[in-house]
Length: 200
Image (cartoon, rainbow, N blue to C red; front, top):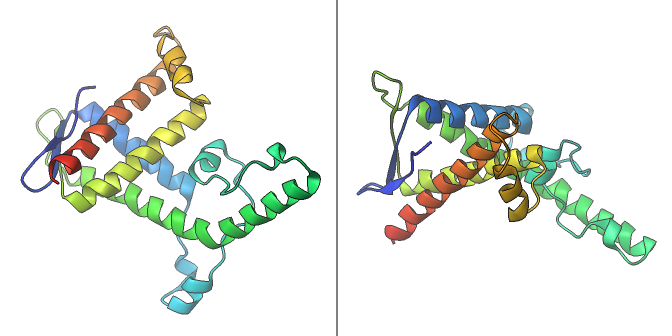
């Protein structure tokens, strides 16, 4: 994997081979499936959408817990039972009024990634150049970060030392491809951030 973004007059561009395109698209689709559908049942009623409440409990799936963490400290770290209960209540309240919007934003960014890749003119080997505007780049950065968090959750990565340890795994280990993908996505994300910096 060697595709990275470079600045262009219109924003950023990266030439990716067929495998790289397939990996990003597949991960983005999996993320969309995990996040779930939007609130289409609300219809076009802006008032209903404004007052729609999200879940108050943290997700049970480890990836979703990483993507939508509690807003306040872990109740397990509280000094007293009362403090722990207060932390749970505050996190539940915050989640109820923010998670739907967070899910919608992550869904929109992941969808943009899929649609962008689907629109890439491919060469005879299935590769092509992804071209992004600055606004699209910002959404891609968010989506790439979500993909990295999802992989990290599946691999149970907590910090850099965990990543370094897993990177030393033998090629025969089934986790190795995900580790390589996680590191590559980090580089891809960083290169995209640099294009925005270069563009002022």
